[in-house]
Image 1 (cartoon, helix red, strand yellow):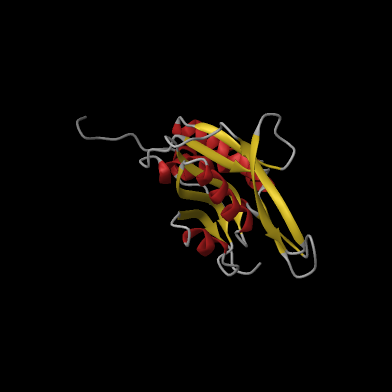
Image 2: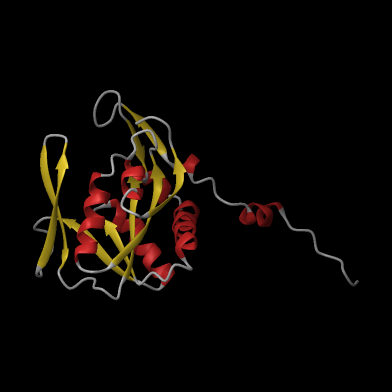
Length: 193
């Protein structure tokens, strides 16, 4: 019969519905210290559909941006960044803590609450022909992300986009990254710390 459609089953209908990524992120109160609510992505990545969809949603946001490399911030940014890089057919650049990369590196210091830390990339990981997307699981204070943008730009690369699974907007880190001229996107946001 022309124009007739076979009804879909409940299982097929469920497969067509987007995964509620936010509901798959576990909130753990008073971790790592009292008053902090830790947003745990391990419950998201343990769910195959949620993990797949979070990577696909991040990649979709940046698909038309001409990304040549995806830089993931250690350690959880590696999880999402590598998947996004594959989806975008781009290379992956690990942004690591000092002393973790075997080749020649360049580093960037950034302030911590009590001290200074350093992140590094391989000196030849990106260059002036690269359009780099920065990826991490969460943006809170923005210190590491701001340092990563500065580090990547020192190579001559373009860094105009950053993607996060989670934004904590009350803390203001995304605004610090935007102040550098970077478009920031997050899949979900949580109020509070």
